Every structure is written in structure tokens, then in C-alpha cells.
Image (cartoon, rainbow, N blue to C red):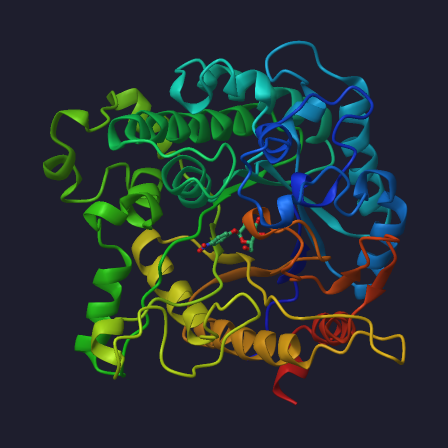
Amino acid sequence: MPLPKDFIWGVAGASYQVEGAWNEDGKGPSIWDTYTHSRQSPVRHHDTGDIACDHYHRVKEDVALLSEIGVKAYRFSISWSRVIPDGIGEVNPKGLAFYSDLVDELLAAGIEPMITLYHWDMPQGIFDRGGWMNPDIVSWFERYTKVIVDALSDRVKYWFTINEPQIFLGLGYYTGAHAPFLKMCDRDLLVMTKHVLLSHGTAVKVIRENAKTAPKIAYAPTGPTFIPDNDSEEAIEKARAKSFAFDGDGYLFSNSWWSDPIFLGRFPEGAKEFFGDDMPEFTKEEWDLISAPLDFYGCNIYTAMRDMKELAASDAKDGLVGEPITAINWAITPDVLYWSARFFYERYKVPVMITENGCANVDYVHLDGKVHDPQRIDFTTRYLRAFLKAGEDGIPLAGYIYWSFMDNFEWGIGYDARFGLVHVNYQTQKRTLKDSAYWYRDVIASNGESLWK
Ligand code: PNW
């Protein structure tokens, strides 16, 4: 069955991971600037995003590459502290102009801009005022959203409020692997959950009420999708139940902790009993705000969860013995896109967009000057076939956004992981389209048909 003509084929990136120019043209520091500069930073090799892909100075060149690949959409995030240096005070006109120019460049190339408002680089000025712990963050995020919507919504239609609360709270404030490298207790994590959900809902309201062109709004969570061990109804039901389990200890990383409030207007069952008096509470008006309708379900999905206790012959914890993995040890499990599309659509009843999916590989420029990455092409072919099968089974699919457009700063593991369709030499900033970029160009040009050849 051919895909709808308006199926969105895109690629993604995020401000701190690509922009560099961390202190230029009036930009204020974010927590990623501050804490990657600290002596205690656990980031591999002490890498920072100070320069990253120097995208801030290379927008024209980078949009030309997007054009060459032929993407229909580019998902990027805005650095809050580039636009409002301390997060709450004066707007920095040069920061805003950078994003406005990027939007113009994209539109001139026929590429749909998709904006993520919060992809983890909180202004240091906000963190110093308590960050997600301070109830005022909701109004600060509201004001920041209004500034961006006023400046860009005449040209931008697609909005993501926040990227992966699971990871920025889970790794930033619980395991300590991401900035600001903290390990906090449930009591505080629950206060932060409350403010993240309210900030999301408030941003949705600001966009709906102020956007100058009809907006499409979502958020971009990740989470564990379990895939069934076999085709039986029983196995499918078991995988579905595990995918949405509240899961006690692992709640911050779960699907239901974040998406049940946003799509169903309630916390998952079992949460209140688990947390007792620490459980966040919302008024009826706040629940309405948080669960205001969204246009689609964004899924950042890379690998499946399996019930290892049942599957592994040995006591392997992370995967099956000798199974295929990417360069950062994530298991290659294509069916996760089929089951994610199905499970999320069945539970939340909005079309599904894969807002991130991709393969970390050991890419380098070969003797012939090209970057041959057959693993990435094979990986993405398999994942896309599984995703499109969900469409054939009647699940409405809104699009597929490959992570990432170009190699970039991969958070806690620095520059070691390369996810890009475009290779970046960090010494020279030379970009080279990988074989996968040309392969993706053909996939897009054929609207997916070439995946079956
Ligand atoms: C996502 N996990 O992060 C982010 O949105 C991107 O910024 C990032 O570069 C990309 O995926 C690749 O990692 C994740 O541990 C980080 O499950 C960690 C996990 C999932 C997503």
C-alpha cells in the first residue's frame, strides 16, 4: 500500500548537540555549558558542546546538505538561553534572529521546520533559581514559548513542547549521567514531574492561542516498548501491559508516568499507592491544561525491551548472547517500531510520528573519500519496513524523523557515538554525506517504495 503523499520524511538535531557558539552574540549559559565545564563532569573525554558542529556559523551550508538529502522536514530545538540569556529577562535579538533566519533558509529550500522548545539545555539562570523545582518555571516557560511563537509561528507549523522527560529527569536528576549530574530523591523528582507536566500543558495552550498559522503540536517522549515473544494474543497482551506498566522504581523512565497524564488526564494505576503523600496533585483545571488534545504521538525509539529473564539462556542482563548491536551496544530490534506504533495508537488514539530513530555506527572517511555505512542502511531499512507494516495494519502514521541529521555531541558519551547521515570531522568541520544519506534520499524520493527493492 503506497504511503500518503504528505507522509513526512525528516531528520533531527538539537541545539546543544550541534550549534556550538556557546557564549557568542549574547547567548547566556545553559546547564550543559556550565556543568560540562566543571571539573566533575562525567562526560566521556570531558567533551563539551562549546563548538560541536559549529552549526551556528554554518546554517547555509547545513541547509544545503538537508536539501541535497531531500528531506521534507527538519526537527531542531531552540536554545532557550540563546533567546533569553538568563531564561527570564530581556530577549536577545541576535539569538532570535538566528532561529528566524534558519526558518527562512529551510522554507526557501522547501523544508518544513519543526521546533522543539525544550531539548534539555536549561538556562543556567533558571537552574540557579531552582530549575524544575521552582513552581515559577511554569510561567517562565510560558513566557519563553510566547516569545518563540510570536516570532516564528507565522512560518512554523510543527511544535514539540519537550523532548524526553524520561531522559532529562531520569539521567539529569536521578542517575546523574546528564547535566546537571544530580542524584535526587522521589520527593523532589515528583515536584519536578509536576512542573514539567504543567509547563508542557501551558506551552500547548500558548501555541494554540497565539500561533499565526494552524499549529500541529506534540511532545517527543521516549520509553520502553516491550515486543511480544511470539504472535499469540497472550504474548501481545503481556508485552502491551509491560510497555505501560507504572513499574515502581523505574517510573521516571516509563511511558505511562508521562503519557497517561498528557493523553488520558490521569496518572497510571499504582502510582498513588507507591508514593503516598508525595504523590503530585492537580486541580481539575490543571488536569485539563495538561491533557489538552495533541495532534500526534511523537516517539523517540531506538531499541526494544524484552523480558530477559524469559529469553536469555544465560544470565545476560543487557541482551541476548551475541545479538546484533549498534556501536553503543543498543540491540537492533526493528519490530520495536511496529509495536510502538500499534501500542501507542491503541492507547492514546492519535497518529504516531517517529520523532527519533537511528543507528550509532563507527563511521569514518574511507580511502575513496566516502563514508560507507552499510550497517546504518540495513538498520534503517529494517526499522522502516516494520514501521510501515503498522501503517498497512491500519495504524495512522504521521511521519518518520531519522536521528540524526549529522554526527553531533552525544551527551554523556561525548563525540564517540556517530548517529548522523552526514559525517562531521570535528577538527576541520568538514561535512561528508555518508552512503546512508544518499540511500535516504532515494527512500524519500520514492516515498518509501525503494525500501522493498
Ligand atoms: C535521545 N536511553 O536520547 C535524545 O533525544 C537525543 O538528543 C540523543 O542524541 C539520541 O536519543 C541518541 O541517544 C536518549 O538511554 C538518550 O534509553 C538515552 C536513551 C534514550 C534516548
